[in-house]
View (cartoon, helix red, strand yellow):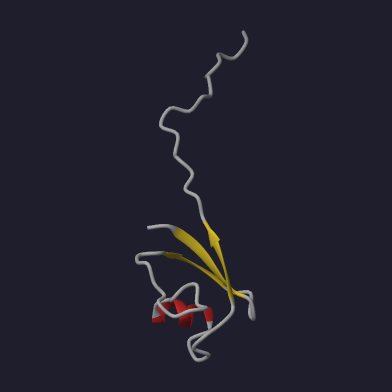
Length: 74
């Protein structure tokens, strides 16, 4: 379920995808993309492309902000 940004090193286009399995199972490959993701990056016709994978960390949403409301001076 890790979210990653995949950057095509040839075109510098990127897409954010969620990793949902343990593949690829071919030596030398680091990630397999869906057909849709590969098309959005413009690498579908090339088949294999050099990419950079950046792990994206989730930032927790504050439910109680630590900002204190102050009364305006009178």
